[in-house]
Length: 390
Image 1 (cartoon, rainbow, N blue to C red):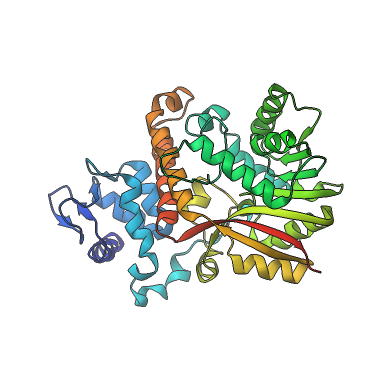
Image 2 (cartoon, one colour):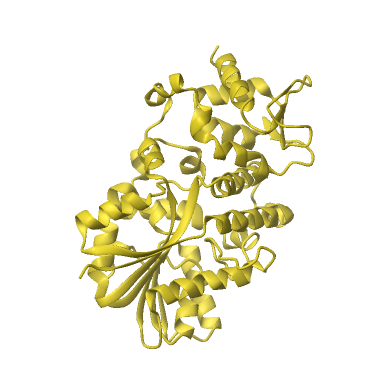
């Protein structure tokens, strides 16, 4: 009964979106023309049962299991973008009242306590350095690039992003820099090459070890100190604090702690520069307490903030204020598209690392899901500068 109801709802949604859904018996639903993106439903009963059990998780799980796939000639990101663009319109208003019934609450085990943060970060970033190398550019930058033109090399666009946020933070010769969430060391190396003294922290052992190796290969170990450390335990004073797409892993409960910690480490006259994925505030309020596919399979403990939430948090808990807000969401859609295509092209290398077909379908869906969010404008990304209020 629930599966039949799920099919009725999905078919109604399809009739509002310029795509096609092709059933095994040849039935076609959707408002798309003959050349529009198409999804091939392989096992409709299994797919609709998954959707009925968990509307927010079932679609991704159905793709992971092979219950549906893309039809020949269709790109997964292009297929998902029209749905993301109409997400708030597709659910019939009379069904939104049942949100509390179908939404699963966030598991307490994914809270971003100091111990929980280590587990959550390790679950994603310690999968394998070789896995990430299979789809990232040689700079190993796992955040949005900044393009001047769409056909330029991804590595060039990634270095532009790094240099821009270092400029935003005022990093120069002699600057004492703290990077919160140092990744594989690309930004720390760039800052050290400007003559800065850099402390970089992270919680993923695999990442920190490779970042240290890359800093040594660059001949910069005397200017870069990379630590396996939580932001809550850092001490010292820094002229510039930089954090690229790390706030998404902090969790709403700890946003005040995060900004208070950064403020406490900031030298007088210093600047904090963060790169953050953002969503509209009304969407944050509607989804912040529910458990979704991304949180279950990709980023446990993750939550994307809104600009309003950041402003409210820093106003209530710190003397900081946001001074600059530079947006480049479409660049993230392009970044994700390139990652996904490279991931697919290197599927044999991914498989050789021990990641099976289900894992690969999981990550293809993850990258396309995020790409659609940015391509549709549902998500955005910004570089923000924060300073103490006068």
